[in-house]
Image (cartoon, rainbow, N blue to C red):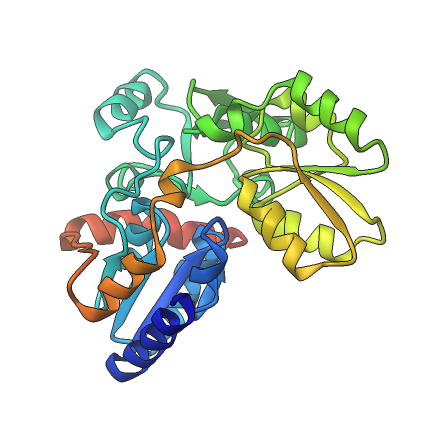
Length: 304
């Protein structure tokens, strides 16, 4: 049954000139019908280079918004309208505007995991893989890093010459990993390397063999000579690595590393979206697109 649905999705997307974008946290059956897979920013860049008329985002809302910002002339569909991001929704423009008023000499560095509205009042965007490089290149010493304080702490440690101000916010999925869970995972798999996302707490990152983005973790594991790995990010990444590297062993750091927002998108959501009977079209006004695009363009200018 799954293969028949996949075949129909592939037929319809070709017929309608649709490009399907799937974040790495999506289920394997969705990745198999996607044109592009990867992390949030990479998907949007790939989408902007596509000649498709319609983009279907299998991810969460801020990713679909970013795709629309970079491809304003294309129709962008979020496959499941309920797929939000708790981190992206933690801070709004009123709150950050008030913080900016109290700290006028700080430049606002926004993680890509933010809403389109919040991006309109930020100076530059970053991804988890580019944050350190971009903050280093900024001519400004005082930085307000939002919204993830764990990623911000990781950047601050790598760039001690900058004065980085953090606010309480972040990814609830990554933040819930405890040192005790990591210790138990290492006891179960003493030969395994520990690979974690910088959205994890600083204590977890300090215990890791590698800290990096989702795509960085996957590349590190695929290219490493090691044979066992403890994966400290969304549980699906361990599963995908098991498929791509059957000669290696991958263990989720915790069984609770599950993003319910990513998991709510199903293959049938994708099917209904390509049929034109499901999903939600993302619309942004011209002013929001223009203002939000500035901090993304600044990111591209400084290193992507």
